[in-house]
Image 1 (cartoon, one colour):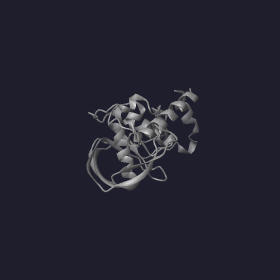
Image 2: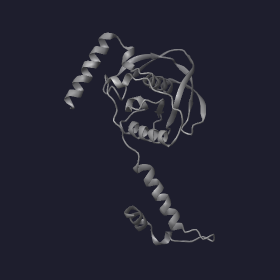
Image 3: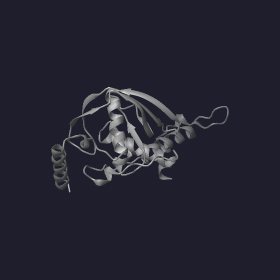
Length: 209
């Protein structure tokens, strides 16, 4: 009730107009403001698991139904990814072990891509990319991955789609799909580097405890 009163108070008197059909434009504006508020107010920034947390090695389960719970997860993951900031996030990284990925490699961060139950259909070529990870903050290492891929997945609407990707997007999709398989990009490195990174992360966690 307090929210309704506040929103109503910020609408000017000139917004109180009624159309020929009897529609009150103040009510329309108020409903629009409420919907906008609700869409933003209920998104949450989730805690991201940090390497070498053993939960990062959990294999994610397929999503059985793209329902309101999955939509909420997608919204929260996107909010978390943008706030970090990052360009990709898998549900595994926020301790939800379902096959859901969000990615946005655009410069203006206005091109959110959602992949539910993703599956690689084809991959070819190879490319070396310096990768980082929100679960391994401050660490960047070169990893070799396929240069071009074709991925099949469900979108936010639950409908299947197929996408061809190359360059950074291809790297990002492969990186995030690894998370769903219980892998971290550190696993591609030498044992010596893995030990060094693990010790660095443990020290970082102690310092932030």
